[in-house]
Every structure is written in C-alpha cells, then in structure tokens.
Length: 178
Image 1 (tube, helix red, strand yellow):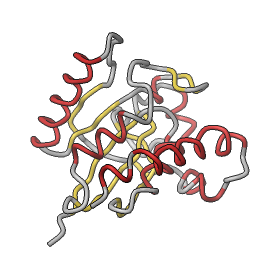
Image 2 (cartoon, rainbow, N blue to C red):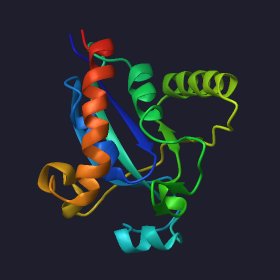
Image 3 (cartoon, rainbow, N blue to C red):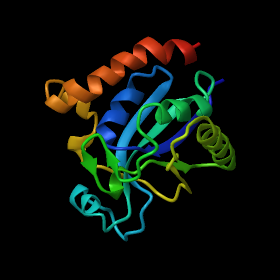
Image 4 (cartoon, rainbow, N blue to C red):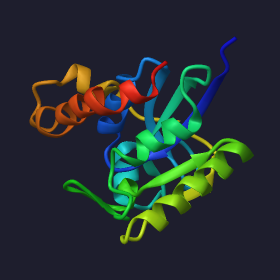
C-alpha cells in the first residue's frame, strides 16, 4: 500500500531541481514555486527576484514512500546543489536561491537535522542549508513548470541540467530504486 509524502526544497534555480526530481520514477509530481518568505498575497517571479518577499525558489515534490524514503529524497536534493553557498548558485544571485529544506512533519524535521549534522561533520565547508517549518507554497508561473522538457535546447538546459540528469541516471537512481 503506497503512502504519498510531500517535501519542499530550494537550492538555486528551481528549473534544475525540478528536472532532476522528474527523472526519479518514485516521484509522482514536482511543482516549481516559492516558499519560505513572509509576504502577503501570491508572489510573482519578479517580486521574489527582488528579494523583498523573503521567498526562495523551491520545488514541491510528491513521492511514494514505499519506493523511496524521505531520507533518500533529501540526500538527492543535497547532492544536486551546493549547500555551502547561501545566496549564489551557478550564476544565480540572491536570497531566493538559498539552500532551504521546509519540513512538513516532525519526522521530516528529525531526518533533516540528522542528515545536515552528518554533512557538517563530513565536510570541512560550512553547510548553510536553512531548515524551517513549511508554512505555505505558491506555485510559480506556468512558464516555469517543466521548464527543462519544454526548453531542452536552451543553453542553461544543455549546459547545466542535462549533465546533472545524466549523472543522476548513472549514479543515484540505481542505488535507491527498488
């Protein structure tokens, strides 16, 4: 019997993270959006990029826990961005690109705390990933959804996203898929 769980992560541009998670068979749905801020109303991309909303570009992932655990989903997220940077990811600048895990349950919080602590102990670099309680999600504009599939020939997709997906297929999927 499957159990569906939701995870929300931000770590650089949501286009890249969305494409990576869409490549995982146990992931049922991925939506790009904004979360982690404190502005009233529904933020726009322009408002989020201004830095005034406090929101990060995030993805919301729904996955089948009988096929992949939250721990594996979190490890996949952490291995596909640089958690030592707080406002810069591969050419993208601003607080909206920060590394953030927005937990949906006490269990997700505990798993996240443990994994982040392990990473801090293993790496000499400071892990700057923010951990916060999930308080809401705003879906990004339609042109941001499934960006990689719709724009495979774009330079960012060919140069940044495609190599990450290829690496994912070779290394990560075979280790987590049952």
